[in-house]
Length: 208
Image (cartoon, rainbow, N blue to C red; front, side, top):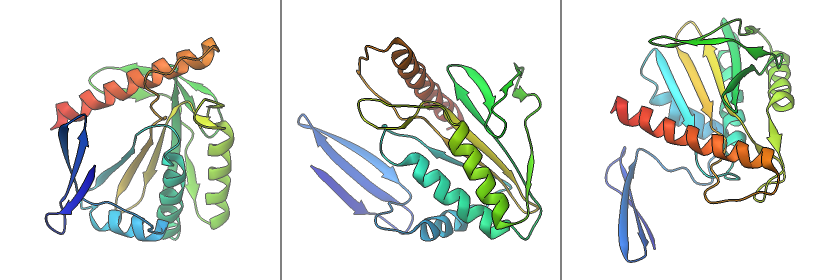
């Protein structure tokens, strides 16, 4: 059983019964049958800080990349008449690649992660947006899996800088729990994805 209850304008309670146990979750908002523009406007209204993080994660095939590209398009369209710089990377099997030119990047871990020589684009026109989205789709690592005809097999991170705000959009690869593949490469990808999901959970727990 799934029960959704609005506790206030900003808090929604989600109750799920599984094997006679009730699991409770709280969310700021739940979108259903909303357009990309409506979702983006809602997110933008809550973006009160200089640096804003949008993290999309969940099971494979749930539309994370579709949502990422929709929000990205709305964001770049809004700020395209301003000065906007954009870079993007993907983490694939613990290596980092530039999503714009598909080159492997060097990185260093001190008290923060330093990634060398990321390509930076400046967005001025709608054509610039289309060019980036096309490169993103082509260079993103993908494979056919049991759940998806074309599944993202890497974690994509998009960095957007404007005069007013900075945005970091993270599109995690889809989680696949307890799935075994005959293809060793795809199996290793799934293992790396699940370990990265656990690492993200620990990062969020450390922050809060």
